[in-house]
Image (cartoon, rainbow, N blue to C red; front, side, top):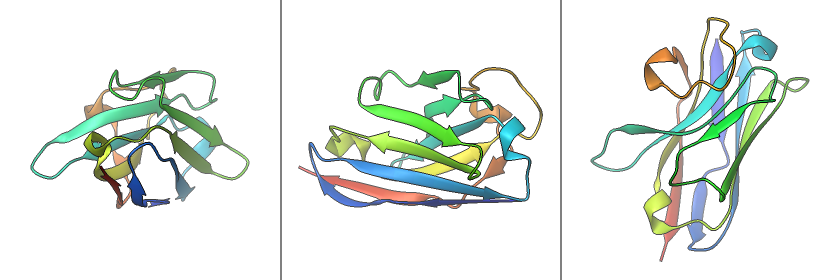
Length: 125
């Protein structure tokens, strides 16, 4: 099982990025997925989640209205579109999956048991 996150980089405040998470070795179409991030010196925090069908989504209050999570089950890929980026968004972003079949968007970090390696997003002021 592998999750490969990509798309991070350096962007100015107010800019946009799109992260991708390519999955292999799992039944992606029945796997709830999520994005988490970890800033320097801080713990890992929830960013966004999406149900296995893509119908249900959930966001952290800090990114609501700026970030959009989506998935393409035909391509085994999840995305995170990030607009209006702020320096506070600087972090390593991780994609993750839940191996057991759960309905809805899963927001609790402890439910996630498949993790990608992370991609660094740096937002300059």
